[in-house]
Length: 127
Image (cartoon, rainbow, N blue to C red; front, top):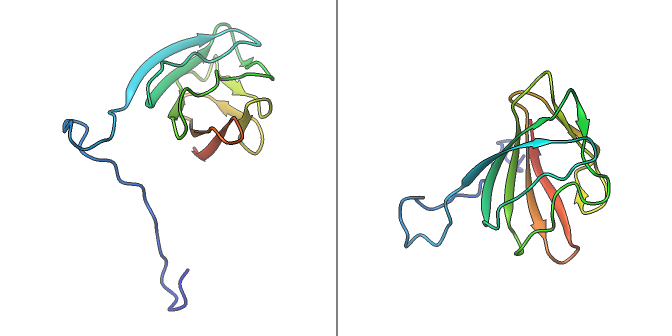
């Protein structure tokens, strides 16, 4: 809140994904079924969304490397749960810093950015 009592909001704006001159890469998407102790696979894209579900019931990701290391600083990924029956529990720790585990059931998501300085995925938001 500012001194005048009004709320101040900040947002990161991306260029037009259809405009190749904007300098921003469009969001790529993929799907993954994760086994218990598994790793959520990523594409080598700067921006991507990955729909995830467990292979059989709720599964926990690997605790050392739940997501492969980023390929470039500020790489972005949004993980989106697609199943209430087989959610994916993204474990906090290893190369991911998300302030506690995150259970991705249907329509739940977490947005992450790769911080190359500390070699960790850092949460920027979750639902």
